[in-house]
Image (cartoon, rainbow, N blue to C red):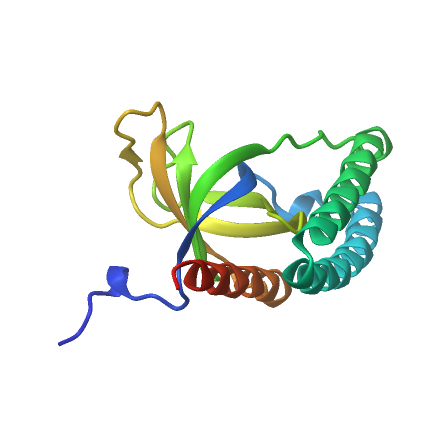
Length: 187
């Protein structure tokens, strides 16, 4: 028996509480300027440092959750302080995250959006993973018509991520780690 395309899964899915910010992607390649390229290069360096630090924090967190949480909070604090200076330097607006329960995998996310995003809408998803405070920025597309949330004011929206191996690798590590914790708790 074959499974319909919409039911196939590339990765395990978990329900998780994350810090979430999303927006419709209206950018185009024509908007690139030297200032933007410099910001991306600096952002890539900071993202690489952040990935290495978060990987280390996750290992520490597995051995001592209190120390791991403290290190994750310090890392998050540094990121917030850095984002406060970024808008004045680059003209970009600051991002505010909402703590949200999502359904998450290495290839996509489902969450309650405040507005109905039509199928095919390009979005940028920024995720703060907990407890490591790791920040990810992924691009993707809404893959199905959003459904109104019962007892809620939003729309259950499913997004499939565009391929970004570095960001997805970090996300997959997080999902596997959380899945292991859930299995350990159920023993």
